[in-house]
Image (spheres, one colour):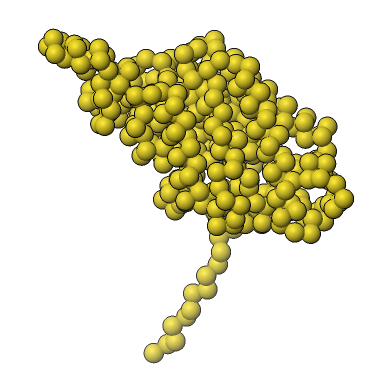
Length: 331
């Protein structure tokens, strides 16, 4: 019997990229993003239609609704704006809102949904920067949402916005982080002129967002946050990162704690910028998230994102803030 010939496996040649193939891939990706956004909008509308018909479990109807109910009026179910009427919340932002749910339990938004008992329409995308969120394409989405209002009817009560972290970390940090010098303060190790230039670009995005809100939906409350004091210890996730440690290695920082002190100084400046916006514009609240997490590696899943318990702690602060802004409408 003749010996069976072995079949040698030959790798198929990789197709050479062309202008057309790259354009096709970009078009496919854009289509997928648009389809995902449409799916989220439709799912939100379905959930809110159900909740509006039933009210929010655990919230007491307003006195007006109770009086109408005693009078036998059907409008009792619709006059719960001071009580059981569910908040209509829209969210745009980065990975602090859009962290993977299946593997890591998600970011702030899904945890906040569970706490509030209402759906949140989130069009957040991990990795997004303020300059992109207020660029042409995503600005059009924000404008459409604020102009048209909730797909469930009426204006949005709240727009949660998470942005700025990705704008001030990563490779560009090497431009404003200076060489380590134990004789000066952490804040002095940041080139003020360069960092302020980056921060001003972020501020411009926030200012434009406020202006869009003022023009299209002045009753919508804007809620921002300042992240928390991340630890640049070189941990990434799923092949992404590290985002900060390479810069500090480049500039000869001897310890993680020496680099962490500089990150804290950067984030304090970022939070101060947000607070100044909140103080100078009506209907803007900055959630005080900084200092929520213990300064320990266990508080963080990686350099930029809190651990499971960390995100839960941050979501608790958001819940308390919304409860203060909308008494009687938040559990």
